Length: 130
Image 1 (spheres, rainbow, N blue to C red):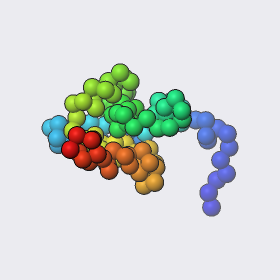
Image 2: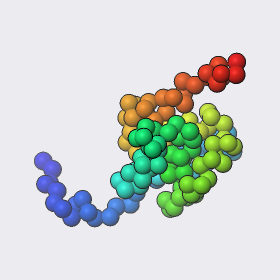
Image 3: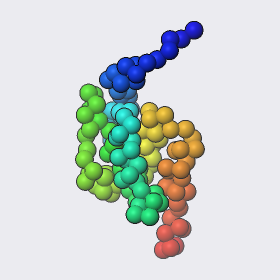
């Protein structure tokens, strides 16, 4: 039988989970970090538009800004880098890394679908220029 956890068990600082991910498209690997609750809340606020609706523009890139890190868990990017990531990485690469980032943060398939759904279902014919 397990121990009953007290306040200290929840408030003791823990080493965050950091996972290595191979990114063959870029010729190497990077690290993804697990977000703490306050970091996840900040990311959620950044993803919300002014009317409380998720702003889909650059969504995957903003997730990567929050989660990509060095091997010690220090972020590689700042918020201002999201636009550059979005313009310079192929959608396939963005989506693959974002799926890994959602997994390390315990998001289930429904959460991931909500986060990435519009990105994965957009096709060139949806752009209105076909």
